[in-house]
Amino acid sequence: MTTTAPLQRLIDLALVAEASPAQLAALAAQASCDCRELLDQLSLHVARAFADGSLSYEDGDCIMNSIFGTLCASDSPNEQIDLPDLTFEVYLAFDDGECRRSGDGPDVDPIEKYTRPQVLQLLQRFEKTA
Image 1 (cartoon, helix red, strand yellow):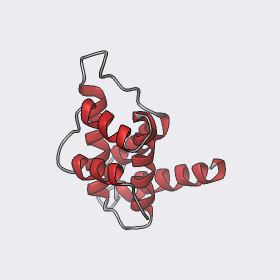
Image 2 (image 1 turned 45 degrees about the vertical axis):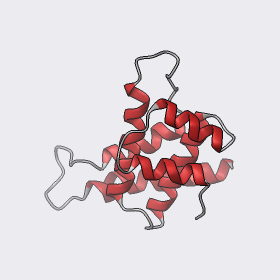
Image 3 (image 1 turned 90 degrees about the vertical axis):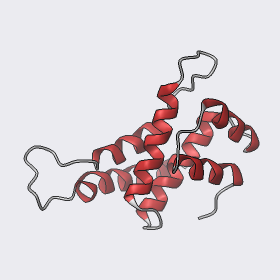
Image 4 (image 1 turned 60 degrees about the horizontal axis):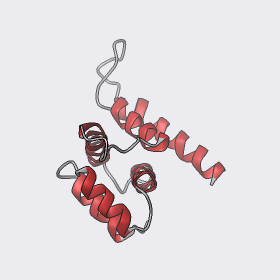
């Protein structure tokens, strides 16, 4: 799975910190796309890499939480970026793996019960429309 240099920089940044809206905009400009398109590229990359086993749940969750934090952190209307639907779906899938639900036994792995099926379903849906 290949990534563009700006996408890889965003992945690397999201693994250690929240990117600022300005950093996100600069990386999108380097990738010759808008921020929403870069976020969807990132989210699709995270979903595919998690599904094929080349990205751990922990790293995928970290990346998606960082991106969500970036989008929610800005108070300036000039820096606000709308959360794309695909990005939000991937974020929610990883968020669902963070803890067990009431009624789940101690042997239930929320990643396998909640996250993986959602990721596989959204990838299947995306591949049908792509």
